[in-house]
Picture (cartoon, rainbow, N blue to C red):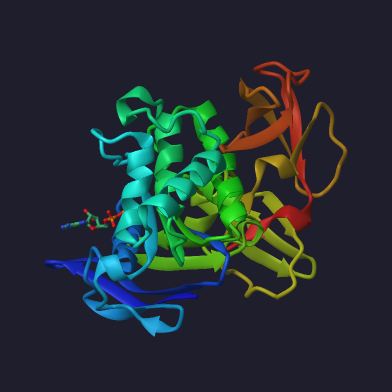
Length: 347
Ligand code: ADP
């Protein structure tokens, strides 16, 4: 449906995007995820026709659109700051795009009412942007972006600048609207939680280069490199060298980590291990299982539905554990942390 092939963009000497290829299937929701400056917006703008590729090509519905003017690409867009025309009402903002795409006045009027219904703002058509909340402005932007049934919807950090509660509400709304109009969507964010919760697939970028493409679960459970492991989700990192292969054991000083290895690793190889906080247990006494370490409780952070506990091991490693809320432990307590060999990510 959308194919980005070997896209490279230089700004002067700066290589902002380096040989990036990916594709979107019809109806799919894909997110470009990466830290600020990794080339997400540049890629989105190239697809929209607002940035000219230095190398590579862009194909939409099988047609090479690399040199097609933006207005002829049939792509809808919504951005971080809603970019609504301030002097126009919500209705007029939506209508504007429709008329540009050849709707006659009567059809446009009817379509605007449908769209206001879609974004659950049927009574706000005559409000100007200045009279709307941040979330409402984003709803109108979305309505405007999907109004003329574009082949592709591009969303550039649309939730940035909204407070946390509103962000979560709008996240659900974006997903609902995207599914209802069934528009193929490319979303850009630096927020891994947004990416994981919204997307069918995620493309992780760093320094203009693609790191990994996969379903949210694949990215989270089987990151391909330390950057992805550390950027997506929280974890505790251990380092060590491979001490034996059957069973697979990684050693660091006199600490041993047991892993479930499908492939054998060279003895002496240096590896990095990651364990997700929800895969670690805390106990008051030892159960003598594999991967059980003694430490003492540091900071406890209550997060409502659960708590995060840092357990400091003697050599200084802080182990991050997700527990039930209000866990029956206190700072300074002696505890044991443990994790199953199958839950160790080895890179
Ligand atoms: P992201 O959207 O991931 O934050 P961008 O695509 O905006 O990243 O930027 C990628 C890199 O290109 C950054 O280093 C940024 O400073 C640079 N850049 C972006 N736009 C321009 C421009 N118009 N001129 C020069 N450099 C730019």
